[in-house]
Image (cartoon, rainbow, N blue to C red; front, side, top):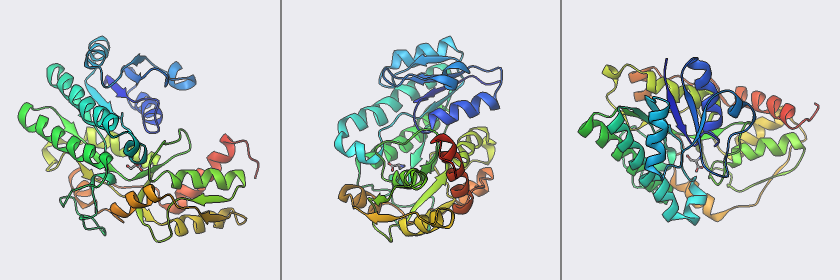
Length: 320
Ligand code: SER
C-alpha cells in the first residue's frame, strides 16, 4: 500500500496520473491536491480523497502529508513554457519556490518526491540530435531555468539529506483527457482536436521543427516505474531522458491524413513558440533510462494517432 499526494492533480498530467495511481495502489490514500479555481470534478473527485494544496504554501503541503500519512509526493505544479515567458516571476515561484517547499516537507516527513523535468531543460547550445543524458543544459527560457534548477535542487536534497528524489525529462505530452495550457508542444494535441472536428488546423510551428513527443499512457507509466525502480541500479536520479517519438508538423499531419483524408493544415506561426522550439532538442537519447530502470515506450506515432482519433471522436461526440 502506498499513500501518495499529487500536487497539481487537475492538470494535464495530474488528472490522469491520479486515476492511474488509484488503480495501481488500491487501499492507499491517493490524494488529489488542487488549487482554488481548479477543483477536481466527477471521477477524479469521487474516486478518492482530495485536498487543497497550493505548492507555494508549505503549511498546506505539510498538513496534507500528515493527514493522509503520505509517503510519496508527485509534484506536477508548473507553468508551461510559453505562458511562463509571460509570467517569469510566477514561473519561478511555482517551479523553484514550490519545489523547495515540497523538498523541505519531504525531508522532515520522510517522503519520496517525483518532479518532472522536460525537454525544455535544454537550450540552443545543447547537441540537438540524440541529445545525451549528461550534456550542456543552458536553457533559453524561464521554464527551462526552473527545470534545470529543479533537477539540481532535487539531486542536492538526495545527496545532502537522503530524500528519495527521482524524475524524468518529459517530451511534449499528447493526451485526450485534459488539455495542456500554454506549452510549446501543445500544437501536437490541438491538431487532433481540429482533425476530429473537421476544422483546418493552423499550425504555430514551422515545418522541419522536430521535437520529442510522447503519448500520455507511456508518460504515466514512466512516472510510476521510475518511483518503483530498484534504487541500487540508479546511477542518475534527476533527471532521466525518456523518448518514444520525434516528429515535425508535416509528419504528424501526414499521419493524421492516413486516417482522416480530408484533414487540412496551414501555417500561422507563433514567433515565441517557434523560438522556444528551435532551442529544444530534436530527439533525446534515453539509453540511461533503458539501462538503469528498463524504460521502454509502447506507443509510436501510428498507434498514438489511432488511439487519439478514436477516443477524441467519442469525447467530442463525432461519428465516423
Ligand atoms: N510540453 C512542455 C511545453 O511545451 C514542455 O515540456 O512547455
